[in-house]
Amino acid sequence: MKASSSALIVVDVQNDFCPGGALAVPGGDEVVPVINAMMPEFQTVVLTQDWHPSGHSSFASQHDGKAPLETTEMSYGTQVLWPDHCVQGSRGAEFHAALNTDPAQLIIRKGFRAGIDSYSAFFENDQKTPTGLLGYLQTRGVTSLVMTGLATDFCVNYSAQDAARLGFEVTVDLQACRGIDLGGSLNEALRDMKAMGITISA
Ligand code: VGL
Ligand code: ZN
Image (tube, rainbow, N blue to C red; front, side, top):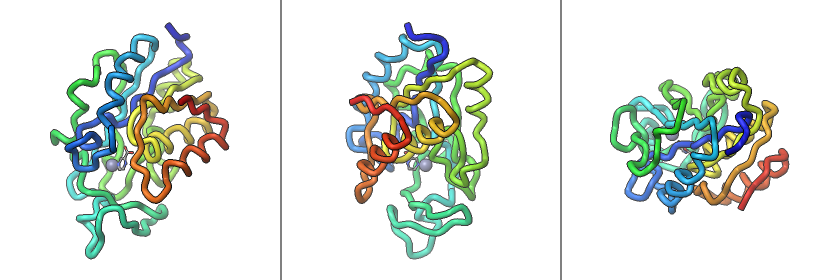
């Protein structure tokens, strides 16, 4: 059992990011048994859940002439446009059926505001609107995080980088993550995370 100062963060292990889902990450479902096996080691387990209203502004379907995986400029910067995914209450937004959700004390939902996306578990994509996770972890005395889930180069990456900037000791466990890899985004994410002092465990 790890110290109570350590938490397991499980990012977006939802049907839409698994094979057959709307935004399937290659091998996304393979993280499920790995994460389930890690959970008993941690006294704090937090799940995140991508949770978009229908018609969310990150969906390519909301932008005339745009296809999924193209980008657009939003008030807060460049945004990748995605297929419709993780719509609130849909089957695609549910956690993978084999993920053990029982040990989790907190589920953070993110991306629920129509006009702004939220990759990170800590801040929305404007990099200033908080999700509340920081307060939860701080008030519970958590200082060290092990990050797992989907996708390595988007939500895991943004969450890990925010955590490092906020002063947490961060490890990303690659056995328990899978990436999308859009135009080299996976290697870029790994390089950026290492440069920030995040431990990448293979
Ligand atoms: C994610 C793209 C859009 C993720 C969420 O969980 O990495 N990626 N929404
Ligand atoms: Zn999303």
